[in-house]
Length: 320
Image: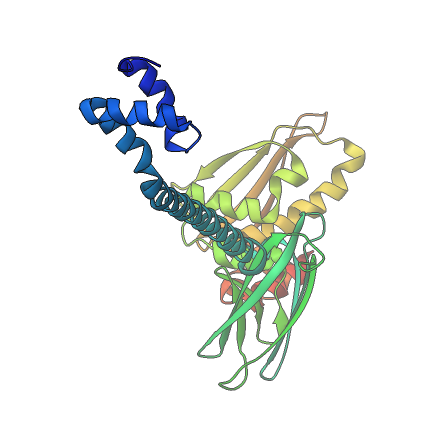
């Protein structure tokens, strides 16, 4: 090899030179060139020095990757834990705590012996199960609340609960504002709703409608309209049936009308008479029960039966 090597040739040989793979003659030529060429000398220096930096840089990069992986894993763990806690809390809320349901809408029986309250019920057909039943006691009155959840093997549709009052004998059991038991009597669904709906004035038609709904007038007779006579006493309430009643069924329907009229007269304090108006195929028929008629049928002043839920229960038993 004659003369000085060109930079391009030296640059091609530098990797082999740096690794000690070139001959002595080539080494001498490269060294002579580098001695007079700062650029090639710098290239050789950079080629040799990175070996010192690569390992720390690689370690730093590996560490950063490890930290990033750890943070990502921690984020996933946190998210998964939060999700599990949320699902667990939601499960507790739905299946253990449950949502409050109207106890009166289900088949429930209540019995009381001294300071013990026995409540049995069934939610059959509702698709719900009992999550819990709570009791609250104040001044001899025990209030019962029912919480339901989707039916599962742990939340069955039937329940039986016993509560022992801490402050002496129980005089009344209630739920959602309705009386379930009073003065030794279990109060039926009709009687408890009638007592809660009692109305002092016949002119309050929305309140009157609550009473007819409690009795089940629409279910018994079909659609109907109302007319009130409130210009002078005795005040009257005419229930006008849309559907005719066939003569063979008339006696049975009149017995039902008599029973329902007694309940209405008891629940509306200033009502003097109830008239059912219907067509039996021979023309319009009016069947009227006065408060005096109702008192004779019930065996006591009809207005006195609204004094308490247990009195209303006595009337229901007497006329139905």
